[in-house]
Length: 306
Image (cartoon, rainbow, N blue to C red; front, side, top):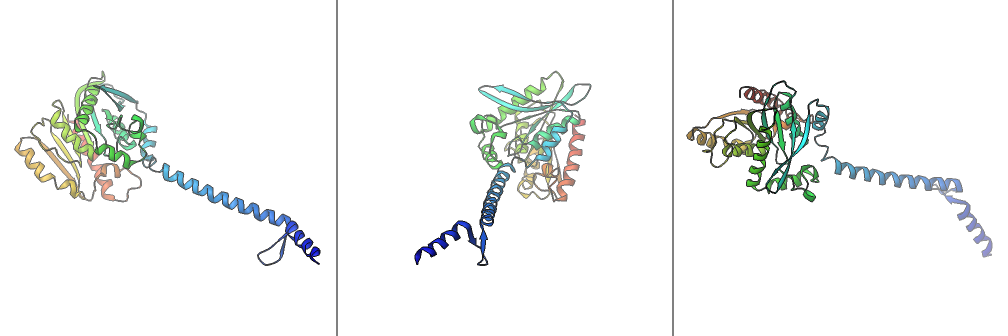
């Protein structure tokens, strides 16, 4: 009595399967369902991989708009190596397309290192007729002795910048200033500009460098001692940046007492980092965009008067 039951059972498993409705499916239907299941699993796995790749790549592409602008620039740009002591500093150098020799500007990056946006600032200065050099102050400090572009993300670069030796930073900036000032296409005039952390470094550099024609401080903190400053200092601050703005009154008093020029403009409705945010297509704060335009016009105007 068992043999016919086993036979029917084996035939059922070999030739068909029960459908969700309780009926039977053909062998082909079972194979099709199995293939669909494999396809579904493969699709989910592919989606997971794509999401992981996007999470990994997005930080690097956060300034894609700046990179695109650099790639479209008609101006000559190059990476140069600045050597001083035992250090080698990479710097991004951009030349203007002009007939006569030009003034030079040292561009100091934000706390996230020499990003595409910081390099684009150098290119935009060159578009206005100035030789611009932007040293990567994280040179040799990245993974395997690399620079900013070798850090895995902005947070890692930020942490490394915060640990930089102040004397090393000053020496790197001096190397950049010496290099650009001696270029055959340079006219000998030199200015420095920095943003965020770089704004503070620009202010500090003005206390150490006596041949500066001007120092431009974009929302950066002041140095402890301003007495060594010989160049006029121009400050650019966001009205919604209380952390930095709170330093302005005492800085004004200190600069006045020391007999130094400190020309400040505070842009209402703008936050910290408005020069970068004002260019970012993803910016949602109108005050940043307006401040960026006004500050850029002011900056170029001062440069033209050097």
